[in-house]
Amino acid sequence: MRRIENAEDIAEGLAWLRAREPRFAEAEAVVAAVPLRRWPDGYGALLRIVAGQQLSVAAADSVWRRLEAAGADTAEGVDALSDAALRACGLSAAKARCARALARAEIDFDALRHADDAAVAARLTAAPGVGPWTASIYMMFCHGRADVFAPGDLALQEAARRLFALDARPSPPRLAALAEAWSPWRAVAARLLWAYYGAIKGREGAAR
Image 1 (cartoon, rainbow, N blue to C red):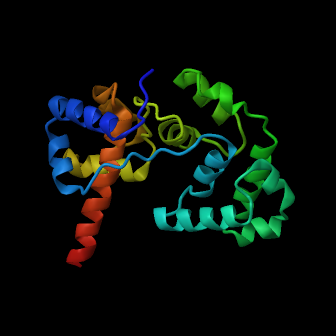
Image 2: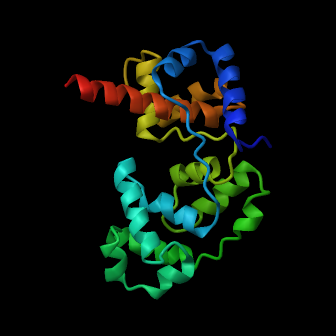
């Protein structure tokens, strides 16, 4: 199982993708960099992903900083806080309930490091509040799995629409099918598409 651990791994994946699909070179030409995006795994990382669902990157980072400051980056820390305190950190009532449920889900995070992708996805999505997107993001950023993708991500869908001149934003099944050609480096393709999305949105914002 290939893991993305450093900038050299990203560079290797990008070179492979450029050779496979020249339009990835076009995407690279407009991004400042393709970030590594690696986090320690465990409960805190999973909660960080759940807390950031449906938020902008800036808003998600702000919520996570408040959770860390309150000691809510561990299962024990979450259990020690009231619902009101969790909401004051920026969690919705539903996300606060999810944080508590995950703290009691008894997920063996150490075992997940060595399981195959399908087993990790199955275990995580069995936990309250964790869907396929969250599981994919966890595997990409916390395990560094090189061939994981998140076709339900709206930014990836929009980036693919723009880069590949699609008639419409691709549905998750269509994007998953398109991404099959990027294996075994789908997680690097995702990082590049996210960077590309940020670049084109930034350019549009500057133009306005």
